[in-house]
Image (cartoon, rainbow, N blue to C red; front, side):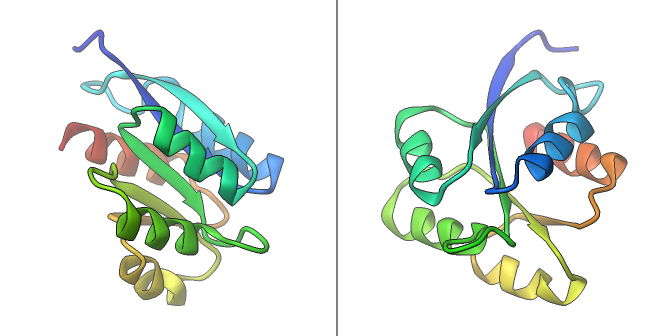
Amino acid sequence: MTEQNVNVLVFSDDVDTRKAVITGAGVRPGRDTPTVTYVEAATAFGAVEAVKDTEFAALILDGETEKEGGMAVAKRLLTTMDNVPPIIMITARQQDDWLAQWSGAAATVPEPIDPIVLQETLARLLQE
């Protein structure tokens, strides 16, 4: 088991969604994963600035965020920055998975957030 600690960004304009992600994924999403420190962003600007200023192991973006959602943020990061960490997109409908993949998401997790699905998804990305 690793004792390493990594940062994960959680972007959503909804504080309840951010809390659901952080609580659902937990401090250690998998047995063989590092512990996670979550950094929260409520705006697209805040999310982009956080990615510029902090080294993240993964990004968890809410595709349903108002104004500029997670899919737009993902696309912007991937077209303007090098070495963007893997992205998990929270989607409202399974039909949005293709759009999340197009925007650059490595994985999707549907709402309502199932903690086990989120943990397994984050653990897989942290182990890659």
